[in-house]
Length: 318
Image (cartoon, rainbow, N blue to C red; front, side, top):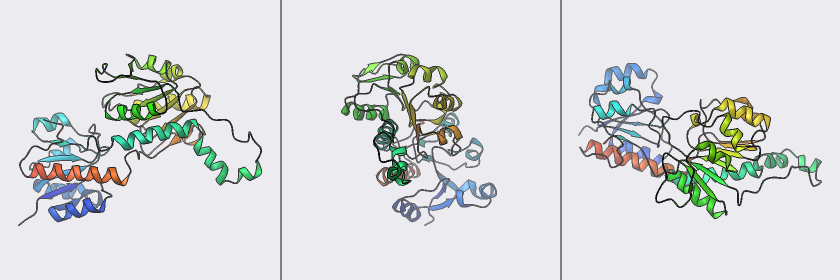
């Protein structure tokens, strides 16, 4: 029996997921093709499922070359690189791995904030570079900032925002948040505007999906956060005006930043890379074996359900 054909736009790093895909389907690895466009023109009509990543998504032009497509399975939570309106018009399910990333993303948000407050990265370099031996006296490393008890403002009280709030509350941090509306099932204080939230916070943590928002953390918000305030972004790079952030970091307008996402990845502004006030990660909030395995299983489930003629449980276009 001929196996269904799957077009894979991004690599998956979990061997068991790749093994399962290979056993069930004929998998075409687009990311390894020398001339993907030519291959698509010749073979696109036979593709039943696409697996892609949140950052890559899939263009409308590619979708139009896949007339037999039954599902777009996003191995991630971001769908802003997928034309959802077009997919709805085709009754084409688009799925994402919602919920699988929550704990890891929240863990990293707190990790970035603690690392920024306690100067963990610069302290690590101080020891590794042998500076401790040269300057063993107290005061060679500047005093850090206590995280416990800081006022934490969360932008976006969805799954990740709530998980960050749970973790921060365990450190005795008062929590406030902003979102499109107040959440009746959230006990923390709702603040209607981002500017007011920044003004009343020691740390601002960006957790919002906010697919259409851009540059909402600008010079005014950073000024409101203030010289003792910290910014953490584990959401979308484009939520931050990076030019304004770089200027604020360089001028000491805010105390520091912990960033996992950027506007034009993998290109990161030099001012952010060179500053001792920043802690940076390469968009790896979900990069644990446990989460990536769970995400892979959700992708497998979505593809199997769609190719069996069922509506995938994780469909976002119903």
